[in-house]
Length: 162
Image (cartoon, rainbow, N blue to C red; front, side):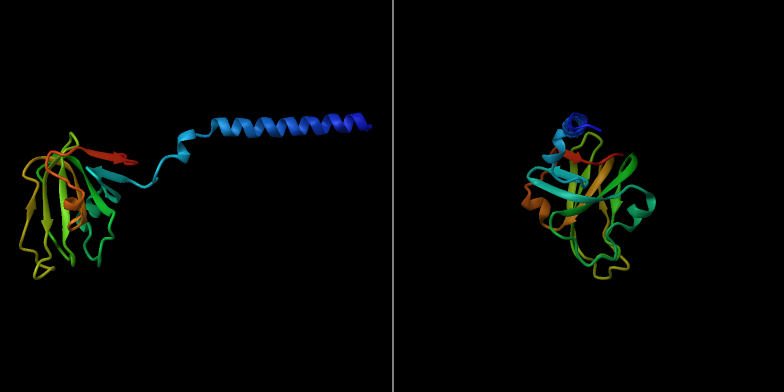
């Protein structure tokens, strides 16, 4: 192999490498670098919470039971198969929780601060959505108020499929 053949081969390799890098950069989604979290999030007013999803009967029934706390900025989003009046209680919960009931049209229809029961194994209080809802968001007590959330507020889901 002569010297000019080696140079031609090296030039071709460099061109191929440059083309590969340029194509890779063009084909990558450009918004990926600017997107925030890839975790499921719920935004209401000034509040944004990364959420665990409770989308099946078992996870909805378990909810936040048995946990010691829920960090600020975290929550659980309950997704129901259809819009109905929903009721919640504080079974085996040892910390107070805010709950926002969310309608099909993505608006807060009712909300409460659910207090810890005297006997967490036998809760007496029941919290009703009052209206048909498809979703319920639970966060640490006081977070909805701090975010200025009110009945009628629009709710935005990010990275949540249902």
